[in-house]
Amino acid sequence: MAGPAASWAPRPRGLRGVTQALYAVLLTVLVMMNLVLGDIESVDLSPQSVPLDKYLHCYRCMLETKELGCLLGSDTCLAPLGSSCVTLHIKNSSGFNVMVSDCYSRKQMIDCSHTRASPVFGFWIFSQCCFLDFCNNPKNRENTMH
Image 1 (cartoon, one colour):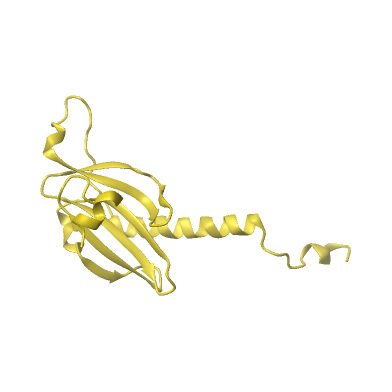
Image 2 (cartoon, one colour; image 1 turned 45 degrees about the horizontal axis):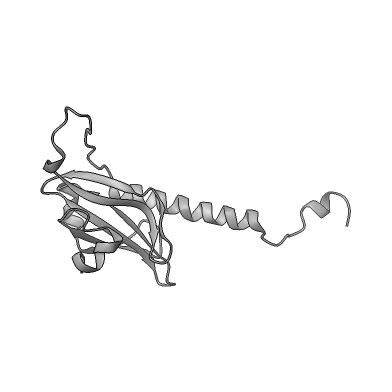
């Protein structure tokens, strides 16, 4: 077939289609994280700032799976003492399961150990909080988060 009609013919999804689908999933997760986590208190890490022993140290990963580990944004976050480390499990009924780990301020701790519907239809979010340094790290989660 030649001419303009040939350019509109359906094509199988190749690498480009898969990449676009992955970007859509990533965008969805990032939007959900923004809605779920809200504003996180930032900490000044300059030398004249408050000593680091005044903070809870938590594992931070913006996108993680059990099979692949952290896929986006692995580092450490700091929260004032009295706050918590958190891991959010974002799931649906078809087996999709990703995690987001971060720090929770005292105001956000009302969501600890709580399951709620997500802003994206068909998904729910389960929050697990813990209160020791790096307790939400994948190596420590089994022992510190129940």
